[in-house]
Every structure is written in structure tokens, then in C-alpha cells.
Length: 139
Image 1 (cartoon, rainbow, N blue to C red):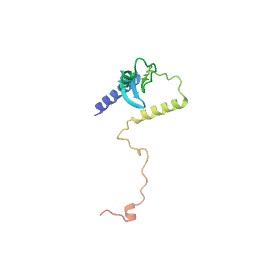
Image 2: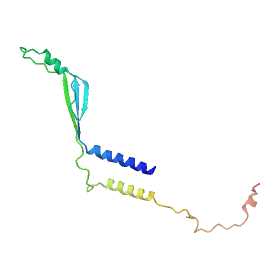
Image 3: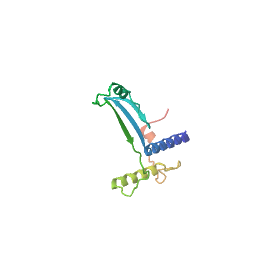
């Protein structure tokens, strides 16, 4: 079970590094205010309104009407540098890191099973038998 969990965590961390360093582009095609198509890594398909507006124009008409469709291209840039410098850490960050490391290391401290906490202490002196004094007996 522990090996499977390690493999799952390592694959998840590899995917996080891959996604954070990868750049990608997606296109959006709007017809008016309505989103018609979304395409990842390619151009978005149009809704066909450009073809309809081309058919309606005549050769002798010089006035051109702007179409209602628009395209939007969104570019998501990935991280270029994976190694970040730790030269300029604030005091709070240093304090947090040292306390985290100390608590993490002390978490795995092995305690022996045969530790007797009262080994160095002597037992109290018995003056009278307490069970007889209190008249408490097991039946």
C-alpha cells in the first residue's frame, strides 16, 4: 500500500511540474456575446456568419458592415525557470522552515519499549496496610 501511494504522489508531482512549465494557447470564437467554440492548440471554428454576410453584399454597394463575430486568443505562458533562488529569505520564512524541519525530524524519533519512567525513584514507605485501614476487600 505504501509503495502504491508513493507512486501516485510521484506521478502527481511530475504532472504538476509538467503543467506549470508548459505553455499553451486556446482560441475563443464569439458570435455577439455568445461563446460558440473553444479550441485548444488550434484555431476555433467559426459559426458561419462570415459566409452569410459575404453573400448579401453586392458589387455596386460600397458600404461594408462589420460582422458581429469576434475571435479571442488567450496565451498561457509557462514557467521558464524551475530553480528558484533562496538567497533572499525573510526572517519569517527562515523561522518557518527551521521549525518545520525540527518538527518533522522529531516526529520519527524512535522510543524504546522498555523505558521505565520511574526507575530512578524509590517507592513510598508503607506504614500501614491501606486496604485493611479503609476496609476495602475484593470478594
